[in-house]
Length: 133
Image 1 (cartoon, helix red, strand yellow):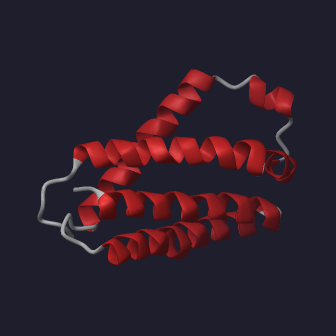
Image 2 (cartoon, rainbow, N blue to C red):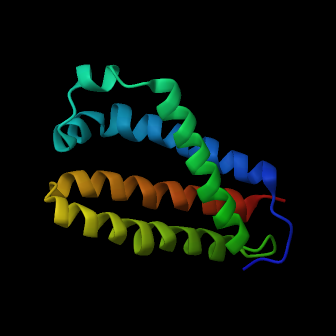
């Protein structure tokens, strides 16, 4: 765990990056397969409270970025930062989702899309933290 101060602007940049990635991932890249796999119709998605969904999602991403920044020292190499963050997505988040998806009997495609997003999101956060001055 880092003993350096948390780079707050980097944490915010990390959280913003997850929104940009999510907009692409769950939009033009994989939005239709994700909707099919999740069983959510576009009409159902449109009825959601978007202010609450996006607001709470951003707060949760800030929390994830903050904790990641606490674990990746400000003096860490770029390779370590990206590797550690990618490992969080691939070896902690994806398997945790996998256990839930197995018991809920959700489709593999649904897991692959969501787990892939988290691997990519954490990797990008690691890149940001590794490059931050």
